[in-house]
Amino acid sequence: MSLFFCSLASGSSGNCQFVASEKTKLLVDAGMSGRYIKNSLSSIDVDINQINGILLTHEHADHISGLGVLMRRHKIPLYVTEKTWEALKHKVGEVDYNLLHLYDKIDTIEIGDITVQSARISHDAVDPLCYALIHGNRKVAIATDLGMISDEVVDKFKDSDLLMIESNHDIEMLKVGPYPMYLKRRILSEYGHLSNEDAGYITREILGYGSVKHVLLAHLSKENNFPELAFETVKGILEEAGIVDGRDISLDLTYRDKVGKTYKLLK
Image (cartoon, rainbow, N blue to C red; front, side):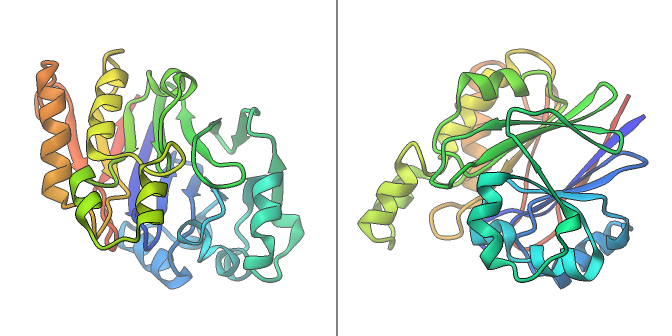
């Protein structure tokens, strides 16, 4: 009994994550073109027509841009909260409503043999969520696009095997960078995005419960971060607590425009 994870893309230009058991294959977000998602899945030997469902974190364009195509062309069901659907339905064109599954964020839902748990996060969207996906005793946790992290999210993630956590920006790079002031304030607010330092301290807290073995840094800004900087910042914060990459955990990156490593979490 195994759970698989692969980041197909993560960043402001688009987001799409692949999570699967041997029987059930899911996408979390569909923020790249349908062609990109199809080709990315093919690169890891997955047929897009085998996808059993799409989960959405929220309605922003970099999380839904390929959604309409995937639903129309490949008949992939969508699992989404009612508020998020109302906010995005005019953006995706005509779709088959038989593919639409509305649920409340407090629900635990089953898609095939994968259990999906969600929790509310702090972001400037109508009903943004993070997810924990569970198969047997293996769990993948995904949290991006959030300005802060709540005790509820920490509690839901603490027994995960793999944690994908936002490490969006370096604070000083953002402050002196080219973004207009209103956008800087948005990103730095509790409804914006996590900094590298935020990612490090939150990861350290979750790792304190002793279960997580793989940590992936996600949604890195092209303008306000460097992959090496994000990695070294988080690595340093973890080392301060005696948590060593390569010994206690594996720390890695996701990418804005290419497929990341595939992880197989064994029973």
